[in-house]
Length: 239
Image (tube, rainbow, N blue to C red; front, top):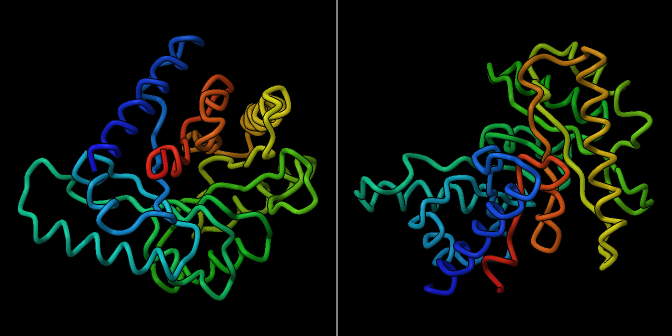
């Protein structure tokens, strides 16, 4: 478990250094620990280390580990532990899993169709909730990836913001899996430009503040291009 502590330390140092390079405050950048490849002993360790934002790709796993985390926090009786865990749903969300997802997640990163947004709004209304979501954008243009095309993003947001029980608070994307840093940077920059454009169109309100981009292999580039949430798993759990 000492390895996990050291890896988190390295990630945080890299975040601070990347922020310094572009004149950002590192407090603007949230480290979201992706737990999909971790066992629960490892998850307990990151919680003990003060990580309160955790993310899962699949709703059944989110349900399982979030329940385990509640039991763990209640049993520890340690004032240094986070009061609660903010769970993030970061993977593709099927409409038949929406009810569970919105009851568990503090933020859903992967809304990419009008039908999914309508399902979230409908289920949330029945549960008297107003879940926070990010619009997932296919900024790389890769045909195999989920996400609304860049050119259709503003129109989709214009439709979603009319729904009373869903709140769009930002954008999310995934860069191509490539060693070419220029390609990765171009993807992140494109999302950042779209973010600015959407705010400039006054389609969204003041809560539209989040850019979820950057994973274990490219998070420093993401920071340089304006990321506010980094989704990091293997750099913490696999070295």
